[in-house]
Image (cartoon, rainbow, N blue to C red):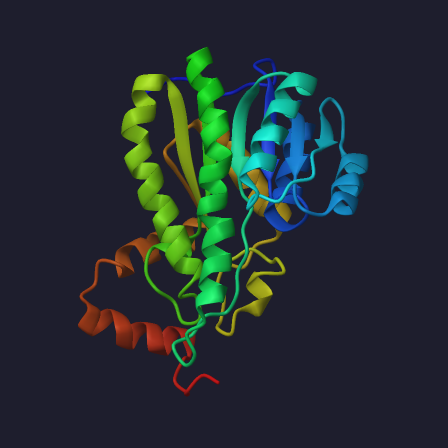
Length: 263
């Protein structure tokens, strides 16, 4: 496996989904660590606010972007490298969550969540990997979720995309090894963001975005394939996913209190 880990001297960090939540806090944390951060999200105003909060020795430069627009993604990657230097580390964090239950299956809802969470990551990786391959080094981190481990009520669309990201990262790891590109998947637990506030079940171990950003920054430096936290939630969930379905489903009904018919 590649030994490469990005440093501030190697180039720029690109963070997508930086207008709020984990992405916003992570961009600030990386700037404090000395990185030049290219921050992307759809909201130009929020990115401007983020850039003003950056703390030396690093800085944050806004690059507004909708990750569902492939041509725009390629254009932004080119601009980042022209204006700030090579992308040494890409943290692909842009995501969305819409409640998806079995009471009413809505294809457009699934299409929207997949377009941002899964295909948005693919669109961003493509031009970045091309450049990292030419340089024979690079680091890419994909933000997944502990919901990737098994299906939770109401997360049929969101959780499915995070499971797909985990499987994709595992597969790409073999090819990236030969290209000297480090790939990581970040699977946070429950972080207090606009998305998690839509959840209708208890969220043990709920963390602030700043606490999550601290864990992610440490994981990026350590370089392990999976960065997962908090451990008191992640490890029990890893164990629970090994249970047979006859035990798993009744357990999840009790833990999530999903005993009534959803509306």
